[in-house]
Amino acid sequence: MARNPFARRLVAVFAADVAGYSRLTGADEEGTYARLREHLQGLVAPNIAADRGAIVKNTGDGLLAEFDSVMDAVRCAVDIQRSMAERNADVPPDQRIEFRIGINVGDVIEDAGDIFGDAVNVAARLEGIAEPGGICLSDDAYRHVRHKLDDVCFEDAGEQKLKNIEHPIRVIRVRDRGFAAEKRPALVLADKPSIAVLPFQNMSGDPEQEYFADGMVEEIITALSRTRWLFVIARNSSFTYKGRAVDVKQVGRELGVRYVLEGSIRKAGNRVRITCQLIDAVSDAHLWADHFDGPLNDVFDLQDKIAIGVAGVIEPAVVAAEIRRSIQRQTTDLTVYDLYLRARADAMSWERLRLLHALDLLQRALELDPYYGPALVLAANCRQNLDLNGWTEDPERERQQSVDLARRAIRASGDDPYVLAEAAFVIGYFESDIDPAIVLIDRSLELNPSSAIAWFRSGWLRLWAGQINLGIEHFENSLRFNPLRPAPPSFGIAIGHFFAGHLERAAAMLRLSLQENPTWPPCYRFLASCCAHLGRLDEARATVDRLRDITPSVIPGAKHWRVPQQREFFLEGLRLAAGETK
Image (cartoon, rainbow, N blue to C red; front, top):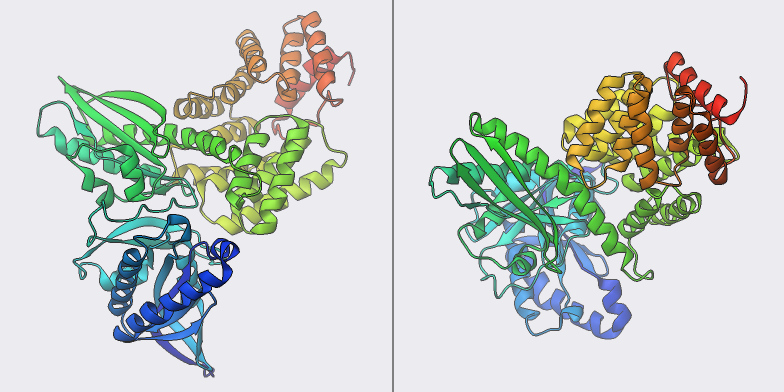
């Protein structure tokens, strides 16, 4: 084995910077710099030295330090954040200097007084996702301090995909027990959607049901945590509100979340009813409410089914709320995530100009972050829809770009269930071999079985592969998890009935889908074909006339329908409706 020319050491890496420093300097450059220098020299540096650490380098608005002990690094971070909270107590929120701190432990390369390596990179990325005034640890660092610090608690934020870090890192947030909640400054909301699931109220009067209620909440938290784009507060933090009358806005401020799920459980005989409501903790608006019933024959099976059902409905409800919130923001203050949300709203419209606008927004997002998986895969999907509707002058170029974007998204996001589902849909549409796409969608559903989007995409892939009954079943699963948006799954179910020979039922469902989506070319094509096979040529031809008002492409290539007999059945009816011969 060749000798390594560089010295290596195992250290705790401590990375800190100022949240929103560019904004602060933009408002008061000299004043901000003077205050930051005083904090660094009068507080941060002395605390690092007192805890046996060493500053490796300053980074403009922050610093990189190393410690021989993770315990010392975490104690130092907690002391700094406590002192900064006291210093900021009388400072207006928009003028506060608040540090974010990330701590990792690992092997580093030492060269010319600096340290390098993956351990340093991870610490820097952890600092980047920490809340202002917050501390994030890697799972490796957490193992060194768990059960050893009585004045803090730890909150599992789950596995996070950190920018330019190959594998997801399990992130642990450090919470301070030392401050009373009313004295603690409100936490700044995370960059991505955030939710806390509060302990459910036991309304049955049966103390034994308390265990069931707590277990139900734990299962919901676990199910929600499978949604990678959603930041879910860990059980230890949300259960501090157990048995307390709470104000949802206060919970949002104390936990730094935008959404709160609360509920109750009531037992009647051998059945139980779980009632849930999702609330925007910022505006106090109710976003969704429903109840779930089931028998208590198998408690664990019931908990699992209800948890998956609740998580499945919450996901699209939060997406819709996030899109509304983003659209209301000033266009001069858009992040990568906001650009993605706005593009997602346009991409769902099935209008050519809005699809093109979505691609423009996604291009801006990818210029800011070329590795943002959701933006990459949504761009792939938009190009796919342009091809599907006949709105592209170069179909082969569109195919290559779509597949390339989908594969880049998979590389960037790894096992993100949403990205896997959308990428599977694109690859399954364009590539001749559909099996790799089936593998991707099955992996997505394994990771997040409550995803309405993944079941929806799986429904299409099964239909394209000729698995009609399974396709209908998967569309019905999608409807169950997202009952507020029935049109797209209903369209897929209609196509399933079309290929199964249930033409009357298919025609009725296709007409309903057109009421929901009057600019949807694929729906016009299938309705025209269906009416032609039913012998209703007048309706079939009128449907084609309306289709021509939307797109000049009446007869598609339809290569994504893999079973030749099914593809020919569809095209035969459409050609008859259009007055064309083969």
